[in-house]
Length: 298
Image 1 (cartoon, rainbow, N blue to C red):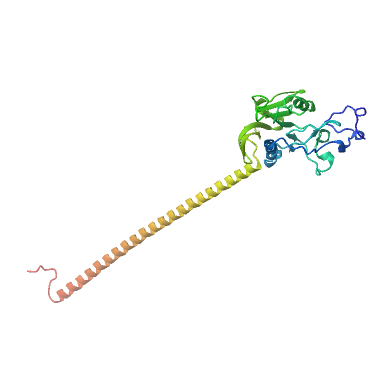
Image 2: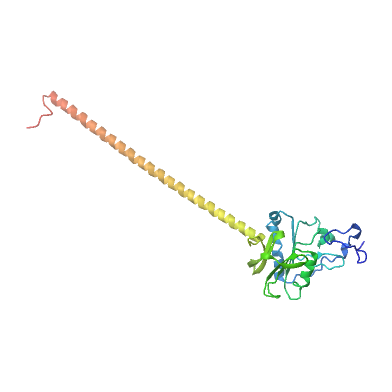
């Protein structure tokens, strides 16, 4: 049975409607083949989603996490989807099979809640990011609304972060989205070969959540540092081995010289003994001949 304005009861869009009022999902336009605005927006959208998976933020936060870009958020039958450039929703999970129509988009009543945070990237002055879109997200109960205006088309601020207070948005303190444990910040650097100022998720200390490429580069740097450390340890060990070998050689040389000195001393003692024996024998022969060997010659 299709819900109509006449038959639909008053329901909370975050809760599943009664079975008799389940909508016909074929009526929802989940894909319209409309491209994203531009190359920058396409890369920026990916930069707002991929790092949350590459850095395993669900594990770090201890909560299931869904991050998506350019996916429609549906909040009622007969209402067109609102499509944020990026969204984050905690404590929800995608269906195992994403092909059924009911699993292709973010139907608030199926996930049981609106997204926790949405991001809009300003590419022109007609998007209504500070007007109709902000009001719509507030009505849906999206806790955090982030507007990134890289060209400053809407004013001097490139980054605006809002949190829902009641049914209206107020600026976030320090761009920190406390209930989801993430912050947002501007980051100047190179992403996928493009140098620009990008919007990044960050932790409480302002450290950006790394992309898969950044994690891989950090791992390569860590492995290279470990390799160099191992090589340095090996070099020091080789130097120590060579020093020990030199010490052994020096000790052996000292021992050899000491042995030579001992042998030389022994040889000297033996020569002296032989001289003494010869002298005694000569003296004995002289005495046998009646000659006093100790008498002084005239």
